[in-house]
Image (cartoon, rainbow, N blue to C red):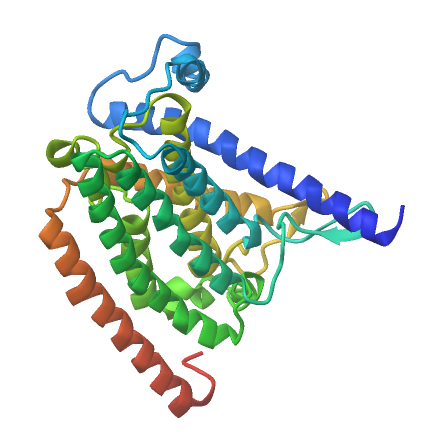
Length: 347
């Protein structure tokens, strides 16, 4: 096999692993969220399809696959059909440059579960996720429904507002690592938990967490789908698998921001404990630390949904423009000054 063919094969296998894991994670998270929220609210949740309702995602998939596809008579057909595809495509593209665990040795070479390790990884993610708003706007406009249009406008305004704060939260991490590569940012956090960016760049972590929660429209920033005000929002007219694609994009985006949270602020696959062995019986322990961090923050997103009420829209916009963005900008300037005065940053 030629080197080019070997690289193409490895890349194809990585794509299958990453996309398969994300689609599987989407199905599992729907069950985990419903069971967790039921436990928090003293309900049973899914409990009829398999033990503890574990087969509920399969039942939901069968139901959505066989439900009737509907489309408003006055809808713009091709735009209406394209919107869910755009939403899923941008959600999946953003995952292409994210590392899912540490490098490891296999088949006589060093491998890593990362489809593309490019020099401008964070810029690529920022650019692709910014395109995700097109799926929302197109879905709201193409349905020719005033409620859908209103939901699309609210959602796009929210995403634009909080993307600015989200981008600001990455600036100091890039300065400290002198790189846009996610792997380089993870490597700067090796050596102990006091090197984690959640400690060194705590204001950036707070801004990122809040902005990411709003970016993926999770409660308390669940305004695009505020059922009490706008009848489910921009996807009011969607049903069957088109609705499933929109929900899939939402959960994949949630998994993406959670993985980035673990990689950028919590040491990625580094345990944070000096002297901790990197492998056990040949198995890289980095996958365990990384997986525990991602699982914990996925649970935090569910926890927030079962705990907090939804903001009003004016509170949402005021918080984004008048609080998050100024805080993020002040932290960037403060860190830049420290970087120059101290000579190399506060580390």
